[in-house]
Structures are given as structure tokens and as C-alpha cells.
Image (tube, rainbow over all chains, first blue to last red; front, side, top):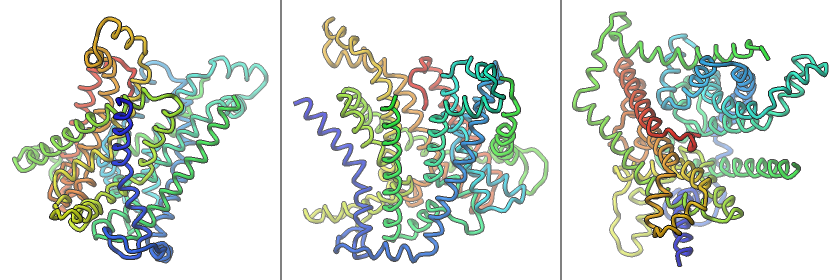
Length: 258
Length: 272
């Protein structure tokens, strides 16, 4: 009886979490423009979607910004994590605290403060400013994913590599890096996800009509019904679920090997 | 391992794109409008006008209500997840995470089509002869949006702590004659407090700063601090006032973080 109640409660919560998403997906296949009544299955919104230059450009921007900024954050963040790991005492604590700043800072403050910076520098706002902003909020996630992996390393391993004749560079790239790679990968993934999901920061730092998908959805949602939004969101959701599934399978395989 | 040059690009990046921008916000909040360099507190004084105080109060209130609802809904979920068998646990967690892979804006947008006057819920109620309710553009809709978006942030930290709870403690409590309610109040809940506190932080922070949820589900009738800041920068171009509001928002966040980390001496829960 008690187990049944637990199950029922969990199901209610899952219905609450999934209902809006299911509705959104379902109505991307609706014949009519209505958001409330089902009038038959069709793919017409998907066809219109692929003909909509603005949405397709926004989708392209979202992917481009996410890939470039997450890669840059992964590289800079990993190098930084090695540097932080080698620090001692108050310097280490200070830098770690500064690292947390963009995570703790409200999105909206991060957004407007960077907007002010770009305006003050007369830096052209658009793709470049978006990528810079996304690297900035992605970096901390890489650093905090890599640091614990470094802490798990045997402190002697670097010296051992040097003793065996590796140059410091080789010791980093051939010994340290492969060991912390799972952390780098997690960090990259977090930065990528944050980038795709971000609306607030992008909204403020963009300009000259450059939009990512979140900004397009926002302006369309304020104008009202448009099943094309449902269609593009369904595709995006399917892509993310597929990607996560593949990664999960890979991770399970690699842990099974050990 | 002395290679501190590896930190320079990172430090440079953080200074230019995180610290300097925040200092610029602070600067604009303290100088006279019009590009002068004369210091003033007038922007901060405006924040304390009744109109704006009520906005701040409303933001805190709506965020608090959402946080409490998330806790009430989320705690049992975390308990059920933690007590389910290992094999099931993994799939249940995945089921919980998947909705978060839908874009944040999309999740909020989806609620618009459910709640609107000609929306699905009202159509459904119509079959039973119930008059359409106006649900969209109410404070309830804003709270609903917050709870929906941030509920997982409450569940996961609590779950993490509960999962590590030693089952022999519960057996001991039972052996010593505590009934389930007493075991919960005296053993489970106090031990899960670190998770509860990080859950509260992780829900309250984004809720108190949002401007998207209030804009889309509140229809602009429920101005929160976030909306006010956005208006100052993008509509009225009053950077001074916008900046002072941003600084105050940061102070609210830092204060609540400080309050919570002070009572959270046990680091087990962890913020992330």
C-alpha cells in the first residue's frame, strides 16, 4: 500500500514534468495553428521551419556558439586548472573563489555587466561578443570539473615521467592530460549545455540583429502562437536526448572496461 | 611542477570579462548620469522609493513561495529516489533529468499554451462544462513557472545527502522505539539539512533574479527586480538606476548565500 502511494506520487511528479514537453512536441505535428485543439497529423510546420531563414540562422548560431565557446573553455579551463592545482595557500583559495563568481553571479548581472563592457570598448556586438560571453560563463564549469581529477592524481606521477626522460611538455600531454581527460570532457559537456540553454546573458550581449535560438523563441513567444517554434524545439530536444544517450553508452562502456 | 604561466590567460580572461564588468556596474551605480565623474548616492536612494521597494518585496516573496513549494514537493521525491533499488534508481534519475534538456525558454513557453484562456487545460475543463479560468498572467502562473523550472535543483542535493545516509541509523532509531514520524523528524531530516540548504539556495537564487518567467507567464503585470533592471538598460536607458538595482540584487544573493553557508558548516551537501 505504502509502496503504491510512493509510486503514484512519483508518477504525478513525472506527469507534471513531462506534460508541457509532450504537449509542445505533439502540437508541432498539428495540422492547424491552434495550440489547444488537435486537428490531425502533419509535417507542414517542419517543412515551413526549414524554409524559415531566420530560425535556421538562429539554430546555426546556437550550435556554432556552443561548439566554439565550449572548446575554447575546455582548453583554457584545463590549462588554468593545472595552474590552480600547482598553487598553494591563499592564492589558490582566492583564484578558486573568483572562479565561482560567474556561477554565483545572477545571470542578468553577468549579462548587463558584459553589455556595458562591450559598449564601453565599442566592441561590435554580435557573434563575437556572444562567443566571448559564453566562454566566460563556461570556463568555471571546466575548471571545477578538472580540478578534482587533478587532485586524484598521484603527486609523484609528474616527477616520475620526468625521471623516465619525458620533457615537461610531454609529461603534461602524455601523462597528466590522459588521466584528467574525463574531467575535461565533463566540463566541455557542461559548458556546451549551458551555452545551448542560455538566454539571459545572450539577450543582453547580442546586437546587430544576431540571434541565437533562445532569443528567437523569446521574441516569437511574445508575439504569440507559432507552431514552427514547437517544431524547432522538438528537433533540438531530440538531438540533445540522442547526444546524451550516445555519451551515456560510451561512458558505460568505458567504465565496464575497468 | 612550477608552471604558473599556465594561469595567465585565465587570470587575464577573468579580470577583463568578469571583474572589470562588475566594477563598471558599481561605477555606473555611483556616478551622476550624463557622463560626469561626480559621485552620488541618488540612484540607490531611488531604490528605496515605495514603488521600487514593492517590486523588490514581490520578487523575494514569489521566490520564497516557489522555494517552499519546491521543498514540499521535492523532499518526498528525493526520499523515494534514495530508497529505491539501485537498478531502478538510475533510470528514475534519468527520467528526472531529461526534461531539463529541453531549452529553459521552451519549458516556460510550453506552459503558456497549457494555461492560456483558449489553452489545453481550459479546453479540457470545457468538456465538463467548466467555464474557462484565467490562469495565464497571474502570480500563480509565475510561481508555477518557477517551481516547474527549478524543482530538480531542490531534488538532487537532497537526494545526494539521503543516499549517503547510513541505513543502520534508521534501524537503530526503530530499535530504540521511534515511530516513522519521529525517525524522520529526529534522524532523517536533521541529517539531510545540508542538502536541503543547498537546494534552497539553488532554487531561490535563479527565482529571485528571473525576468523571463515573469515576462512570459506574468505578462508584464508582475514586475520583478529582473524586469526592472532589464527595463532600465534596454528601454529607459537609465544605467545608473539599473546598475544600483543590479548591485542590490548581488547583495541579496551574497547575503542569502552567506546566511546559508554559515548554517551549513557540514560541507557534505555541496553546492554542485
